[in-house]
Image: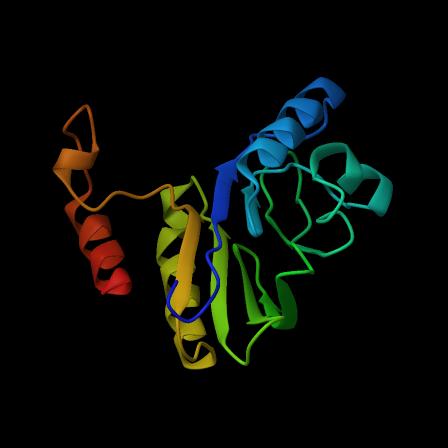
Length: 177
């Protein structure tokens, strides 16, 4: 993809909450140092994000270009932000556990899609989450990136205890394929 676009980077981070101003400053400093083109955050735990709040944890060039899925209760939610001098938002699809954004380069006609996801930690909901991911496929044309926190594993080597649910691993692998 870098041959089609100028070099760019995507940062994906499960921040586990952005309610503390000190933590927001740390997150913002990390982004300023990393100089990403697109930022994907999971588990913001924010019900709503206004411009003032976005400036507390995003670099200035990102705070006005965000899409997010609101938090429900004390859990999760996701946010995607981008540098408007590099990419323009062409469209988005927001679902309970995913935020799919399609971007075009500001310097060419090329597009790509990022699906930012924060999967449920309650595995009783994992099958529904994976079905939602499969339903997105027809809406994604061209290069794509799947980023986030799946709360799932591909196999026993991904788990330090060795205890796994083989059916869930199989469903996850089939979805990724």
